[in-house]
Image 1 (spheres, rainbow, N blue to C red):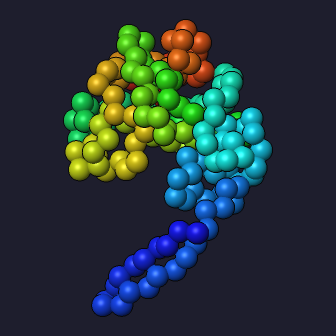
Image 2 (cartoon, rainbow, N blue to C red):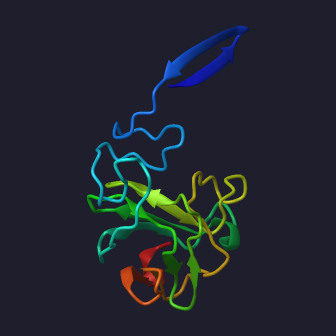
Image 3 (cartoon, rainbow, N blue to C red):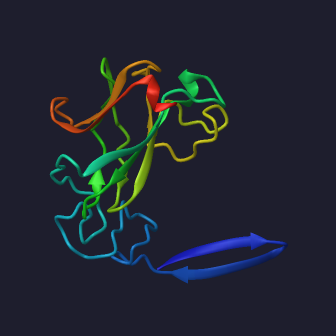
Length: 173
Protein backbone atom coordinates (compact mmCIF):
# COMPACT_ATOMS: atom_id res chain seq x y z
CA UNK A 1 0.00 0.00 0.00
CA UNK A 2 1.09 3.55 -0.66
CA UNK A 3 0.10 6.66 1.23
CA UNK A 4 -1.56 9.64 -0.39
CA UNK A 5 -1.61 12.85 1.56
CA UNK A 6 -3.40 16.07 0.82
CA UNK A 7 -3.44 19.41 2.61
CA UNK A 8 -6.28 21.84 2.05
CA UNK A 9 -7.51 24.73 4.20
CA UNK A 10 -5.25 23.74 7.09
CA UNK A 11 -6.44 20.11 7.27
CA UNK A 12 -4.30 17.12 6.44
CA UNK A 13 -5.84 13.92 5.18
CA UNK A 14 -3.77 10.74 4.79
CA UNK A 15 -5.33 7.78 2.99
CA UNK A 16 -3.76 4.44 2.05
CA UNK A 17 -4.34 3.06 -1.44
CA UNK A 18 -3.24 -0.02 -3.28
CA UNK A 19 -1.74 -0.12 -6.72
CA UNK A 20 -3.98 -2.64 -8.43
CA UNK A 21 -2.66 -3.67 -11.79
CA UNK A 22 -5.54 -4.46 -14.12
CA UNK A 23 -8.08 -1.99 -12.75
CA UNK A 24 -7.77 0.42 -15.69
CA UNK A 25 -6.17 3.25 -13.67
CA UNK A 26 -2.44 4.05 -13.96
CA UNK A 27 -1.05 4.60 -10.47
CA UNK A 28 2.34 4.70 -8.80
CA UNK A 29 5.00 2.81 -10.73
CA UNK A 30 2.61 1.38 -13.36
CA UNK A 31 3.60 2.27 -16.94
CA UNK A 32 0.14 1.35 -18.24
CA UNK A 33 -3.08 -0.25 -17.03
CA UNK A 34 -5.45 -1.52 -19.69
CA UNK A 35 -8.02 -2.95 -17.31
CA UNK A 36 -6.97 -6.61 -17.56
CA UNK A 37 -4.19 -8.99 -16.58
CA UNK A 38 -3.34 -10.33 -20.03
CA UNK A 39 0.09 -10.34 -21.66
CA UNK A 40 0.46 -9.72 -25.40
CA UNK A 41 -1.97 -6.79 -25.66
CA UNK A 42 0.57 -3.96 -25.21
CA UNK A 43 0.37 -3.81 -21.41
CA UNK A 44 1.62 -6.82 -19.43
CA UNK A 45 -0.15 -8.38 -16.46
CA UNK A 46 2.46 -6.46 -14.40
CA UNK A 47 1.37 -3.12 -15.96
CA UNK A 48 4.58 -2.67 -17.97
CA UNK A 49 4.45 -1.49 -21.59
CA UNK A 50 5.34 -4.19 -24.08
CA UNK A 51 6.10 -4.03 -27.77
CA UNK A 52 3.35 -5.50 -29.95
CA UNK A 53 3.01 -5.65 -33.71
CA UNK A 54 1.39 -2.49 -35.06
CA UNK A 55 -0.66 -3.08 -38.19
CA UNK A 56 -1.78 -0.61 -40.84
CA UNK A 57 -5.00 0.93 -39.54
CA UNK A 58 -4.21 0.39 -35.83
CA UNK A 59 -3.31 4.10 -35.57
CA UNK A 60 -5.19 6.59 -37.74
CA UNK A 61 -5.16 10.35 -38.11
CA UNK A 62 -8.45 11.93 -37.03
CA UNK A 63 -7.62 15.66 -37.14
CA UNK A 64 -4.86 17.93 -38.39
CA UNK A 65 -3.99 21.60 -37.91
CA UNK A 66 -1.41 22.61 -40.55
CA UNK A 67 -2.43 26.29 -40.48
CA UNK A 68 -3.27 27.38 -36.91
CA UNK A 69 -5.03 30.70 -36.44
CA UNK A 70 -4.20 31.38 -32.76
CA UNK A 71 -0.44 31.10 -33.15
CA UNK A 72 2.21 30.84 -35.85
CA UNK A 73 2.71 27.68 -37.88
CA UNK A 74 6.04 26.88 -36.24
CA UNK A 75 4.46 26.82 -32.78
CA UNK A 76 0.92 25.64 -33.39
CA UNK A 77 0.85 22.77 -35.87
CA UNK A 78 -0.56 19.47 -34.58
CA UNK A 79 -2.25 16.22 -35.59
CA UNK A 80 -4.51 13.90 -33.61
CA UNK A 81 -4.12 10.11 -33.74
CA UNK A 82 -6.60 7.40 -32.65
CA UNK A 83 -5.69 3.86 -31.55
CA UNK A 84 -8.37 1.77 -33.30
CA UNK A 85 -6.95 -1.55 -32.11
CA UNK A 86 -7.79 -3.63 -29.05
CA UNK A 87 -4.22 -3.38 -27.70
CA UNK A 88 -2.09 -0.74 -25.98
CA UNK A 89 0.38 0.64 -28.53
CA UNK A 90 3.79 1.92 -27.49
CA UNK A 91 4.56 4.92 -29.70
CA UNK A 92 8.29 5.13 -28.95
CA UNK A 93 10.29 4.83 -32.17
CA UNK A 94 7.39 5.52 -34.52
CA UNK A 95 7.97 8.27 -37.05
CA UNK A 96 5.63 11.13 -37.91
CA UNK A 97 6.16 13.20 -41.02
CA UNK A 98 4.94 15.04 -44.05
CA UNK A 99 5.84 14.34 -47.69
CA UNK A 100 9.43 15.56 -47.18
CA UNK A 101 10.69 14.79 -43.65
CA UNK A 102 9.98 12.92 -40.41
CA UNK A 103 10.48 13.14 -36.64
CA UNK A 104 10.83 10.14 -34.32
CA UNK A 105 8.78 9.78 -31.15
CA UNK A 106 11.44 9.37 -28.46
CA UNK A 107 9.42 9.56 -25.23
CA UNK A 108 9.73 6.07 -23.68
CA UNK A 109 6.37 6.48 -21.92
CA UNK A 110 4.35 7.56 -24.98
CA UNK A 111 1.54 5.10 -25.61
CA UNK A 112 -2.14 4.93 -26.48
CA UNK A 113 -4.58 2.43 -25.04
CA UNK A 114 -7.40 0.90 -27.08
CA UNK A 115 -9.74 3.64 -28.30
CA UNK A 116 -7.51 6.44 -26.96
CA UNK A 117 -6.63 9.62 -28.84
CA UNK A 118 -3.28 11.40 -28.69
CA UNK A 119 -1.94 14.67 -30.07
CA UNK A 120 1.39 14.99 -31.85
CA UNK A 121 2.25 18.68 -31.69
CA UNK A 122 4.93 20.84 -33.22
CA UNK A 123 5.40 22.44 -29.80
CA UNK A 124 4.34 20.87 -26.47
CA UNK A 125 4.10 24.15 -24.53
CA UNK A 126 0.39 25.12 -24.21
CA UNK A 127 1.34 28.75 -23.53
CA UNK A 128 2.78 29.12 -27.04
CA UNK A 129 1.12 26.36 -29.10
CA UNK A 130 -2.46 27.63 -29.07
CA UNK A 131 -3.53 25.80 -25.90
CA UNK A 132 -2.81 22.13 -26.71
CA UNK A 133 -2.13 20.16 -23.50
CA UNK A 134 -0.55 16.71 -23.20
CA UNK A 135 1.19 16.51 -26.57
CA UNK A 136 2.97 13.19 -27.18
CA UNK A 137 5.61 14.59 -29.54
CA UNK A 138 7.35 17.94 -29.76
CA UNK A 139 8.66 17.93 -33.34
CA UNK A 140 11.14 20.24 -35.04
CA UNK A 141 10.49 18.99 -38.56
CA UNK A 142 8.37 18.41 -40.60
CA UNK A 143 6.62 21.63 -41.51
CA UNK A 144 3.04 21.00 -42.61
CA UNK A 145 2.48 23.01 -45.77
CA UNK A 146 -0.73 24.88 -46.48
CA UNK A 147 -0.48 23.77 -50.12
CA UNK A 148 -0.52 20.15 -51.27
CA UNK A 149 1.13 17.93 -48.64
CA UNK A 150 0.56 14.76 -46.64
CA UNK A 151 0.86 13.56 -43.08
CA UNK A 152 2.36 10.13 -42.47
CA UNK A 153 2.77 7.81 -39.51
CA UNK A 154 5.48 5.19 -40.02
CA UNK A 155 6.86 2.22 -38.12
CA UNK A 156 10.32 2.62 -36.61
CA UNK A 157 11.85 1.21 -39.82
CA UNK A 158 10.76 4.43 -41.57
CA UNK A 159 9.37 2.41 -44.49
CA UNK A 160 6.13 0.82 -43.34
CA UNK A 161 3.25 3.30 -43.53
CA UNK A 162 0.68 2.92 -40.73
CA UNK A 163 -1.49 5.84 -41.93
CA UNK A 164 -1.22 8.52 -44.59
CA UNK A 165 -3.51 11.45 -45.37
CA UNK A 166 -2.86 13.67 -48.38
CA UNK A 167 -4.44 17.11 -48.35
CA UNK A 168 -4.84 20.22 -50.51
CA UNK A 169 -5.83 23.84 -49.77
CA UNK A 170 -9.45 22.92 -50.60
CA UNK A 171 -9.64 21.12 -47.21
CA UNK A 172 -10.15 24.58 -45.67
CA UNK A 173 -7.44 24.65 -43.00
